[in-house]
Image (tube, rainbow over all chains, first blue to last red; front, top):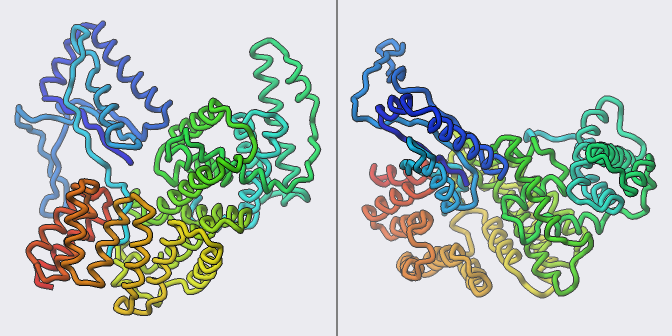
Length: 131
Length: 414
């Protein structure tokens, strides 16, 4: 069964990330790269991506003629998807374990960030024969 | 595995895979390395044979190529470690291996038992079985399960290390081990079939190539163990279920329930074969869960119209199955069958009892079954609420679409 692990952060999270001391930044990046490597080696990783800063993000809608109408202004308070993993695991509990590990990534000063990670099942389960 | 026919050469390769692997393991003793070498030989054959023709003795060809690969591997490993072992020298000089006069029949069985080892998770056992016994490539298996090739390669590699670490000898299980080990093999084959028959990965309802592969391996097992009633029962169950494949989905890939399927589309040959197999299996005494499930599938398959279904017989079969199986899904289906025989109230009482036990609490199928029985009983509002509750809880996209459509149909007064 596949689960998506979504790491959300507020817009200012992206901004403050850029002002971390080099040592902390390195530790954080190293932790994430190592996590992905381990997930891959364990045969669990389907995909993992980090997303670019929301500063350049656009909201797109179809206009009258179907052409894209873009809107780049976001309310300050909104949370943004910073990155995600899709893992193929045996149980929901195993997905929670992986999420907890990601959540404990080191932050500024090296302490675990304990970020909230949203875990949701990917709709790839088997349908049963229904009457 | 692209869902198309793999052709004669491909078929032959897959059939030879476990025999070749057995021969290589006997020669070199290392399951993990031998399996890698055989995989390389199979890939080489898949590239070469269509161009240059199938060699006169395909099995010997594969054994030779795999032996060479493994010898090369041992040589380079040895060079890397800068210590030449006597073993490597001995292997190194063997260029053309003699082909043993066995047919590899036992080897296929031994490999099935090894790949369905109790130390492995089901996902690992499935992947390893498809590769080592099914002769599928890592790319094909990764594609079938929609994971990256590197992830599947790691899963298979770890599975092999687990089997190796377990110290399982390369031989058939003893008579005391036989029954539980065979049950594990049947379970893995059943899971592969189900994955192919019911998966909704990527939105497709079925991946028939996985079901076909499961049926091929189960057929091989049945041929090796013709007197085992459960091996025959499992093959019958697969045939009787797969016979309905094309009728099970609509033109947009939507799920069509058994009661609304166009039964003229059912594969009569598969049904006839399944029924014959089942009859043979049942005549051998010791009735097991796969035979009972096959018998239930056969009762459905033999009804020309949904309303002709012999529900009392199905209920009797579920009553028997429930005595053998702790699976709450059996109890759930038993409740549905009870509703079809004794009316919706009897079925709903069964579902309530099941929910009180807590074994299926919050499961989407409990809500879906209840919705169906409430609809039968004419309680439209509650049926709608339960269809929607089921839709919220399923992890299958086609199933969610189906359940939402049921709720909408009732709301529209249909």
